[in-house]
Image 1: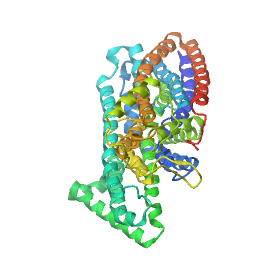
Image 2 (image 1 turned 120 degrees about the horizontal axis):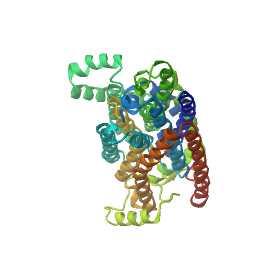
Image 3 (image 1 turned 180 degrees about the vertical axis):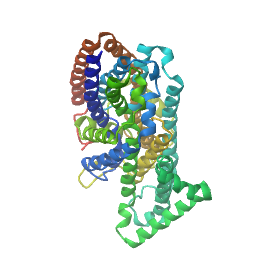
Image 4 (image 1 turned 180 degrees about the horizontal axis):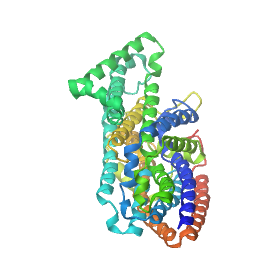
Length: 503
């Protein structure tokens, strides 16, 4: 028993490190898509800035971590060995799933995968009654609702802002006229959702909210914030003369990316880190204090551990596979006519059928353009600002309520929603873009099903065979990784011979 606990805890920590890197390759790669697609800054600079925000966001992840750590199943009826088998099996499967999807450039949700991996392991080892189905249902509902809210909000906000700005997001007179109230609105909703909703459990924020919103009312305070931010933005534009307007929307896009990365650290980092850190505390406490698995769920997670996980995720964001995920999402919602994307034939046929019933074939987005370096500009800076600010607000709001949601799903919905508002699918490779979106959404449903069955089987092997089971699953993990790498690299060579859409 002691030998299994020590070996399982050691493997769990090693797999936690690996899993954090894989989350960086896939989920965290979505943080910079809008800024990179708009050519506001280089990919490496964007990743570096987002990585710092991810690490800081991890400091406020407690409510989400508690849901992922003990909300999916009942730890009080599990033995230490059974709980460790569940935690380790989650990483055995999660690292392979994320690595495989990243290799094919497919954005997938760490949150959804992890939740259903916990469900599968608990279901196979402890039975149907051990799973907290009400909590699972609330998490799934939160994910679905967050996707809908992100897509609809991005569509509506983009349509309103585009009606004012049109395709003149770099025109001085247009920015002076409409820029202040647009950025004022963005500042207002980012402040409301990021601070007063996402950080509502922080004592300083509670006091500030009591002195303002609780005293004067939410509507009045939000209007006052909007007026203040609008006035300040207008003064800045006037004082900076002929240069400030060029940086207004690019700055908002970067600010939105930072907020989004901070919210990601609150939410998705907690999901990836919680099983491994819970396993570590289980080993440390179980060795000395008892045999109930819920010991680990009652011990606070140290801040240094969350910081380390944030750093590991940041390293994954710099990898080649992360670039593949970035390209997929950027090109799917691109305002450029021709893009390099893969989608199965059935997805393209379905897309062509959907596009036949579309409305006007004229787009509202600016004409396709290239940056000074000759790179394709997939989004204008106005749209990049909408994507990042809407995504950050939705994720922060969910984090404040302790609900694990998917950064990938939320960001992808914002890209598609804002793209529909700009009618970017009305010309060029519209069938390829829509087909890719259909394929991505299809994989969103496939991933949880795979996660339940695979993790259940792996957990059974680990629990029944003890240390030999851990060795078998470790070999299976590396073998699956090898197979996915070979196939993904061949797929990359076959379908993405040109790198002009990425770099």
